[in-house]
Length: 534
Image 1: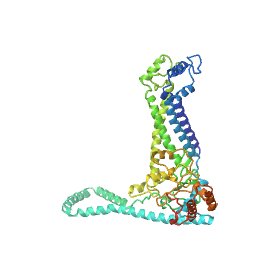
Image 2: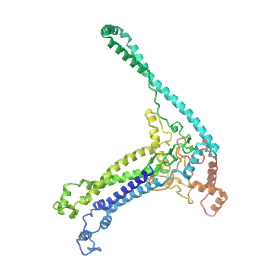
Image 3: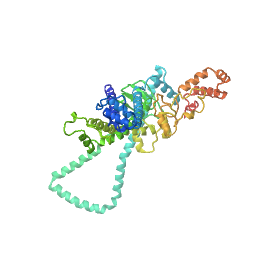
Image 4: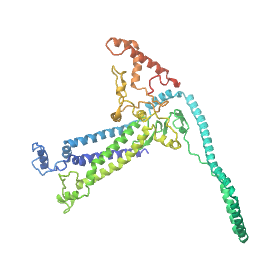
C-alpha cells in the first residue's frame, strides 16, 4: 500500500501532463483553425489575410516549416484559442490545487486535537486528561458496549425465531382448513393403503427403503441450522453523538470517526482511504476530494467534446483525401509530410492519429467513471453521509422509516456542513467586522461555484450537527475577539472617542459573547449560548 500510493500519484500526474500536451499540440490548432500554417509562406499568408504586413520576423526561405511552439502561439493569438485555453487553464488550476491539497492535508495532528476537544465540549463528554481517567474511560466503554451488544443479539435472535415460527403456524392453519375434505381423502388413502400393502408384501426391500428415507428426512428436518447473525461494529451500537474508545490508538473515539490502519490514526468523518491521493479522506480534506472529482469529471467531458470532431475523422474519406493530396499512398508515410487542409482543420494527420484517439478515449472513459463516482459523493454530501455510513445504513434504509441523525435538516444545510457559509474564514477584521456578516454568505448558483474555488480554509462547522443544527467552530475571529476583550472595555471606549466606529452596544455584545463562551460545558441547555449553533 505504501508503494502503490506514489505509483498512482505518478500515473495521475502523467495522465494530466499527457492530456495537456495533446490539447496544446494537436487540439488547440484545430479549434483555432491555424493548423494549416506549416511554412513561413503560410505564416505570411495567414497574417496577410488579416491585413498585417507580410514579414513578421520570418526567414527569407518561405518553404521552411515553422516550429511547433510557433504553431501553438499562433493558435493562442486567436479569440477561439484564447477562449478554450482559458477554460482549460481554469480546470487545470482547480484540479492541481485540489489534488495537491488532498494529498498534503493531514487528518491528524494539532488541528485534530483542537476539533476533538471542542466536539467533546459541545457533546458534554469529559475528555480524559490523566492516565487514570483514560483507563476508566476504556472500562466504561467496554462495559457499555458489552451490554448493548448483548441486547442487540437477543433482539436479533428473537426476531429470527419469530420468522422461523411464522411458516409453521401458516402450515398448521392450512392443514386444519383442509380437514372438512376428509371423505375424499379417506377414500384415496384406502385405495393407496391397499396398493402400499400389496407393494410391501411383494417387495419388503422397497418398503424398508422408503421407511428409511422418511426417517432420514425427518432427522434432517429436526436438526436446525444455527442462526447466522450479521457482524455488528461497535460504532453501529452507539448513539449519533455518543463517544467510544479506540483500542488501536488507545484514545477516546469521537462520533463519526474511524481508525485508519494505513495512516494509523483516528480520522474524523472518515470516508475511505484513497490510494490515488496516498491519504485518508476525512473531515479536513473531503472538500478538496469532492472538488477534485467534479473538476476532473467536467474537464474530461469537455475534453471529450473538443476531441470528438477530430476523432470522427480518423479513417474517413476526408482523411484519405488529405493524405492523397500530400502524395501519400504512393510512398511510405514516414518519407512525406502530410499537411492539413485549410477548409477543414479537424482532419488529423497520420502523426496526430494516436494522440487524438488516445486523448478522446481517455477523456471519455475516465470522464464517465469519475462522473459516476462524483455523482455518488454528491448524494453523500447532500444526505450528510460518508461512504462508511452509507454501507452501514443500507439495511436501515431497506426497512423504511429511517432518518439520518447527522442530517442538518436539508440538502442546503448539509452542503454548508462541508463548504461552510462564506468563502473567507476570516472575512473582515476592519472596523465593520461585527456588522452585516450575511453579505459574505454564499447565494445562488454563483455561490456554489464560489464555494468550490481554491481556498485553504478549514471546515467552518463541527463534524456533526447537534439537535439537527450546525455548530460553528471557534475560528480566528473568535480568538481575536477574546484577545480584544482581555484588553478591557476601557480601551474600546477610548478608541470610540478617537473616531473609531466601536460603540457601547458592540462592547456589551462582545462581553456577553465572552461570558457565554465560558459557560459552555456539559449541560445541553448552554450549547446555544455562544452563538455557534446555526
